[in-house]
Length: 403
Length: 92
Image (cartoon, rainbow over all chains, first blue to last red; front, side, top):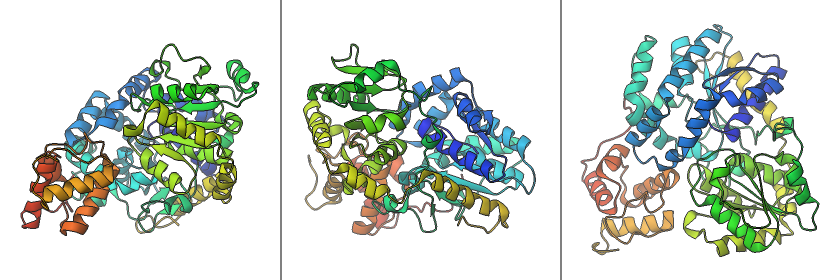
């Protein structure tokens, strides 16, 4: 199983791997070094694709991903982040671990190019896991950018394994019927739908295994916040750095303007204003599953894992969405009155403070969130996803679809 | 928008971008991405172009031309006159 990105991209794979292990399989998670501990805690075998230092350096470059406007931009990002070398590492790991007739390759949709190469090299079945609807909606654009920007170098990687160049781009990227979607059908129906035949398993986020936060406890500095008379507003842009430059400055200023205590959670302190306004506390990480139900509202970037987590906690959310899948996630939730959101052009301190104020005062939110999530069970979603992958492995791979 | 022909392809593109991105271009030289557009907006725009102009734009043409109102209008007009390429079945 190959995935890339930050916590929202990796934990679902850890959870999925754990579900496969529970069903008697021997999953191998191939991803960034800092997630080795998560895999170990879940009892899942792990192979790193980088070092902690290389991953940190890569993260520092990820804001460039938000500025990719052409195939050449994407190629430059791959070159600067040494992602073609990483691609070879991933292929080599899969080749070593492969057991003919007994191995299924699973990759994160849009980034796990190594899974597609290894599938050709090893003759193994492959499935792609999409983490949010926009990955599927924009797949033609992703394919174009990858094909036009990376195609020549991918062909060189393939040649190194004795493989011919890909002659049909669409056929190569889209293993027919083998895409698993980690969101529920009601979320899919709230916006442009996934292609017909896509299997939707529900939100799989990994929180249920207690992975969030370094110790599973709220750090002391945070606990003081929750002892006060007013629950705090939580601000987080997730664990990544691919954020609009103004995300934290605007979110923090707006939370401070409200006059409520605020907790800002990011591992990347340099992204925050310094000094922070009075009443605003920073922590690098917290166990979100424990913290969210105790917050008056959450302001976040629109990551699907954070959004699903807030929904399950019944915590009103304000989404400052920029790039990637975020605006699509936000508009789906807003259409169902499950979030308020704003694109960057509307990010003023007073405007966002007003949205947070509305969210805090939204007494009906909890009921709406619980109704939306009534059928969502993360354990069942993980089992459903694992079962769908299992079907693929158990079947005649050439024609099988996920079901 | 500065200097578009009324009811021209440029004017229609300006209206579409305003609706999809939420920011209407003020010049035919405005770039889709500079206005705040990104991939999901692009998908929506391509669907709108198909619906309004009955042409399926090729991403190669679109990106090669520079994604301004003026250049996009030329790409659409070329495609409408049958000079555009098709994007399916390309090698990687």
